[in-house]
Each structure stands twice: as structure tokens, then as C-alpha cells.
Image: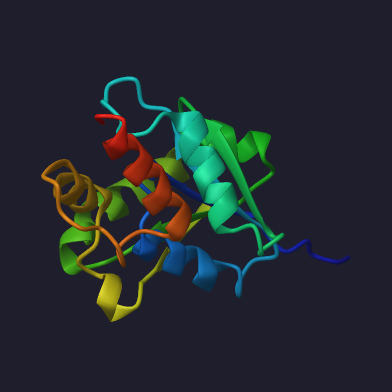
Length: 165
């Protein structure tokens, strides 16, 4: 009996995708044969970029990694996991402050879907301060986000700014 290597899902809003996210995906593809970057559609948040554009930007960012797939979802992550035949949730852990929330989410996902495991990955030290919220705030206030986001995201945000965004 052969065991199929698990598919991993890296969920998030990715609004916008930043280099910390990219680092986590690059680490994950060394561990899993397929990594699905799952972009959450959250109607309660006011996104900087629409979901379809975030999906496309993530696809372009990882175009050279065929084992990275990108999809959007709404609702419960465990439902998306089941539909994707995935068994591993990937979460980035930047600092101790992330632990309590991430631990609670991992336990709840396990309760809702016992066959799903959560794997925590830490980014390179240079990315531990990065969050989408911080990048969005810097960009909104007119700051330079070069070196914080991948080139496709930078180009999209520069176009957005040029259009009065």
C-alpha cells in the first residue's frame, strides 16, 4: 500500500501578496508535491485588490513553479480542503504573537475536519515584520513598497495608484 503525499493549502487574503508569503510558498514546495495558495473571499473586508486580480497576481508570481496552484474560496477552509483533496493547512508563523490565534485556528480546523493537519512554517528573518496590513498601510500613505512585494504585485499597485487608487 503506497501513501499519497499530501496536498497542502496555504490560505489567506493575500491583499496584497508580499515577500513573506512568497518565502513561505517557496519553503512549502520543498516539502509538498502540490501547494494550493487559497485566496479567501471575505465580504466583510474592504480589499485593496479584487479577489480575481489577487489570484492572477499570485499565479504570475509563481509561474515558474508548476506545483503551485492558485484558487479562491469562501466559507469554511475545511470545506475547501475536502473539495481539493488536501490534508495539510500551511500557516506562516512570524512571531510568538501569532501563536495564540494560529493555534486556536488549527485546533478548530482539526475539530471540524480531523483528517486535516496544520503545519507552521517560519519565514526568513528579513520577512518576519511583513504583513499585508503593514504593506497596505505604507502603500495607502504613499510610501515605497519596492522590496516588500513581488514584481507583479508592485506593478499592479503602481497602476492602481496611477488611476487614483
